[in-house]
Length: 511
Image (tube, rainbow, N blue to C red; front, side, top):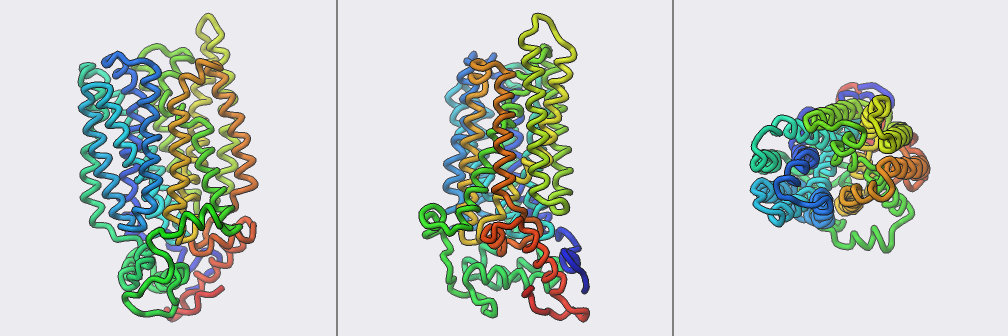
């Protein structure tokens, strides 16, 4: 087998079995996205049915993300203890209970409780699905497979918008409850289906189960040689002798989260400190730039722009969901070709321009005594462009990047810290947007988001090096050297391309 760069062993792309496993693991993200999308329209109906105030609507919109903190902060330790697969099962069960309570929604208190419980499940799901996908992926397909949860979130949001539109004519008492409660059905199917998946090979090695890890790697790799190389690298990262051929060993490295918080927060190495800053920063800016305000409050934004019909509001909102999903799909095809960093910087630059034009259009419409067709058109185009730019870069890269940059020993709990920041910002924007635009006008709110996006671009330029094509076990080197990752990726591409000799025998994996 001959090749250069990422040819050879890795040229075959995503292994279909690994792809299927990542798809199943990511279904939990569809449920989370659906709940976010459907809430934007359901809020219009529940406010009328339950006679609740704007402040209570804000709390309902954002409380799920605040409660997700509980799940995200405990998910890392739990997944190190019981495994990535069973953590997804736990997330599904918790989300099922929350969806049932929301579907009943007899009063505000029950609805609030359902949102809180579902939020805990969301916290688990957001941490474990990208980590699981990253850990079963080859370097050449990791960007694609790890972005699947974000695709599923966007698909779920679109399904929520579609549900709003087609269930809007049901009696008020039942319509919004069906919109929210229907998510309980796929959560049960996921909890059962997830048991057919293999465990993460990296988690198995951390437990000392080398034979099981080897069997999984043979299924999720394109060749036996690739599987053997990946196993050796994982063993080295876990503190196991690379030449060890035992089926079961006593793990050398900590394997259930002991001491991880100290290594992350109290005594981090310079590389780990840079990794932590990059992870927390990218999660902070994903939501600080306003995407949740757009996803949850699209009908209100378009109403401010000049659309008054409820049917038209929901229809235009559905169009935004289609745009978001379409551009996420485009992004998945580019992540492993173009790289994380170019997509991220291009995405945020486009968001700055679209947020600024949206702020201008909304300001003109808000201060006019009559409808301004040109302002409405500008708002619609700007909103769609904002969603498109967000979806083609910042949305998928956030989850791919934060799930792949931590060393193996720190990955689960490091990723959980990122998810915690993500949920705090998501909940903050969700629960304050109405109050924010009442205080500084709706146009002013989007000018504020544009300013934050400028800070985000600067942060990404200086703190987020490229990781495309770099094996998980070597990404720490990228942050240690302070380089953009290209040399590490190229060296590894040559090594992987030369893993097998022309007669198929395994050769040295060293570059």
